[in-house]
Length: 508
Image (cartoon, helix red, strand yellow):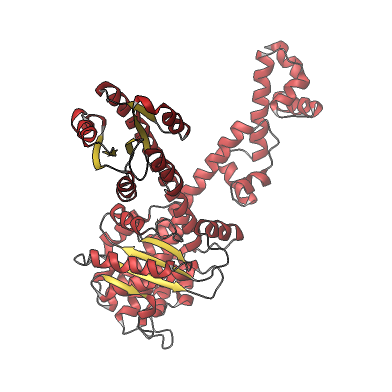
C-alpha cells in the first residue's frame, strides 16, 4: 500500500477527503492528517508518505513553503497535489512551477480526486519498481566488487571504485561487520538500512553466505557500525544461529580485506565456542589455537588437488592436520577443525572461480562425511578431509573441462559471426582469457580443423553463397567474405574448390 498524508486547516475538508474517497481501491492508505504546515512537516519527516494532498493557505507554513522545503531538504520528497480555492489561481501557477503533480479546486469532486489517485498510483508504483531494480543492480555491483576484493584483487582500479563508493579517499582505518544467520537476509538488511551510516557500504554476501557491511573511519562511522551490530545481536538474542562479528584494521593502505578477514575469523571463533551473539576480533584470546593456519601445508595440499595427483592426497592431509613442529597428529581438536575450515574455503574459492556450484558441492560432501561441526575425533577429521579432497579433485577437474568446453563453444560461435573481420588466434586467446597454444589445440579438437582451416572454410562458403546469389564483382565478394586482397582470395578459392570464382559462378 502507498501512504498518503492529508493537510488542510479546515477539519471538514479533512473529514470529507477521509470519507468520500475509496483510498484502498487505488492502493492508498491515509497515514496521517495535519491542520497546519508545521505539523505537516513533522509528519512528512517521520512518516515519509508517498503522496501529500495539501491546502495552499494555512497558518505558520503555507502549502507552497511545505513543498519547497520538502524538495530541498529531503532525500526523497513525496509527490504533492494542491487543494485550492477559486481565488488562489496565482498560487496554483506557482505550485505548478514547483512541479507539483496536480491541483484540485474546492469543493473537491469525488470523480476528479479518483482520477488523480489512479494516475498518481500508477506513477508511484512505476517509480518504486524502478527504484527496486536500481537497488538490485547496485546490490549485484557491490557484491561483485567486494567479491573481487575478498578474493585477493588489489588493483588501483578496484581501490578507486571502493573509495568512490564509501567516500573514503585518504582514510586507512576500516571495519567490517559480518552476520551469520538463518533468518531472512532481507529482514536483517532492512535493519542495516534503518541505521544508514553515510560511510557504510551497501550490504554484501560473501562466499560463505554471511551478510557483510564495510565502514570507513569517517564521522564516527565505525562506532555506529559496532553499535548496530550489538543492537542486531540483542534483537535476535533468542536465535542461537545469529552471530555478529566485527573486525577492525587501521594504519595500512586499503585495509578492507584485512578487516574482513578479522571479522570472518572472529565469526568462526564464536561459532565453535557454541551459541550466538556479538563478538569483536579485538576481544579474542590471542593464544587461541584457532589463530593459526598452517599455510605451507595448506598450499601443498591445494597444489596436489589442483594437479589431480590423487595418490599424494593422503600424505598432504596428514601434514595439514599435524603439529607443524612435531609432525604428529595435533591433540587440540579446534586447531584441526580450523585447518579443515581453511581447506574448505580454499576449495570453494577455486570452485567459484570456475563458476561451480559451491552449495551443491558442500551438500554432497556433507551427505558423504557429515558436517564438520559435529566431528570430535582425529580419525573422523581425517576421513572428512579425505572425502573433501577427493571430491574436490573430481569436481574441479570436471568443472574445468565444462568451462573449457563452454569457452571453446563461445570462441567458435564468435568466429562463425565475425569471420569477415581480421581474426588472429593470439587476439582471440587474449579476448577469451586463454593460452594461445592451448586454444589452438582445443579448437581443433572441438571442430576437427585448425583455426586457420576453419576460418578459411567459413570465408569460402560465404564467397560461394555470394557468387550464387549476387551479381557483385569478384573483388567486392572477396572483401565481403573476409579477404581484403582479391588476388589472395582467388588463389585460396582455387586451392579449396579446384576452380576460379568466375568459373564457379558460371557453373552455378
